[in-house]
Image (cartoon, rainbow, N blue to C red; front, side, top):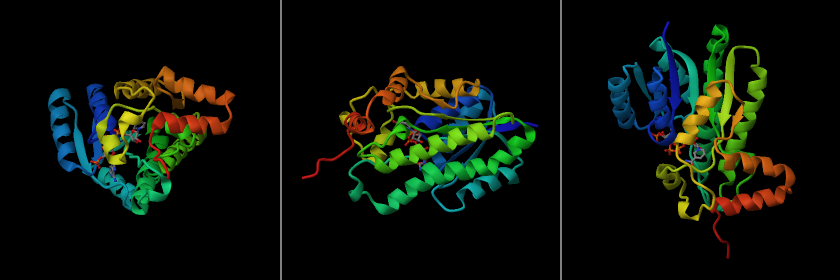
Length: 262
Ligand SMILES: NC(=O)c1ccc[n+]([C@@H]2O[C@H](COP(=O)([O-])OP(=O)(O)OC[C@H]3O[C@@H](n4cnc5c(N)ncnc54)[C@H](OP(=O)(O)O)[C@@H]3O)[C@@H](O)[C@H]2O)c1
């Protein structure tokens, strides 16, 4: 039986880079996002370069029933998923009261609901086979509230907590769940969609390669929350010694996503 790695958010940025990496490792892929043309172009390139099988599933995962639709797509084609990579996600920057309510609801669906729903759909078969992995792309933003990115940081805290709980629930089952929690990554798509002026970020901005390396580390069995860089680890470790309010104030300065109120 051949297995597939399903990657959400594979059309651009980190998800695209992960698709290249998994294809390079010889994995067959199911690529999920809304931009069908980008997914088809990537699939064509990777089939030629790596000789793997790739299916493209165009799906807006903010829609109710999206996880069921992605699951049916795989069932109808007889695709067994042994790695699920929940990478799709986006941020909204700015002051909370000015955020568009519909966009916030969409973000909650993509960053939280889809992660849990897809995991719930694909987990039973992994458990039955006693093999598989769920890889969640969370964020350093999930370790404290980030003023100017209030709902985004809350959504990533959800992913961090979901992952921690599941990792322990699944101990001894042969199925691994872990989250990669990067700080800011060099990817203009992400900042443009968020409306986040990246010139105001005062922390290091890393290459997507650090995420790829962290995913490899997780697949090798190391850790349930993986902080890719030394800076990321320092940020989370130092929280233990600093008052919570200071942690959040520093997060606001580092992210530079908050607008001045008159
Ligand atoms: N960039 C950073 O600084 C950073 C830092 C930490 C964590 N992260 C996390 O890393 C992940 C990937 O981000 P990125 O930097 O690669 O951003 P990106 O380039 O904007 O990629 C986001 C991906 O999510 C997909 N997506 C967004 N909304 C969707 C929807 N409604 N339905 C289906 N797919 C949807 C997009 O595809 P379509 O638009 O084609 O649908 C795209 O493939 C996210 O979870 C993000 O929170 C990013």
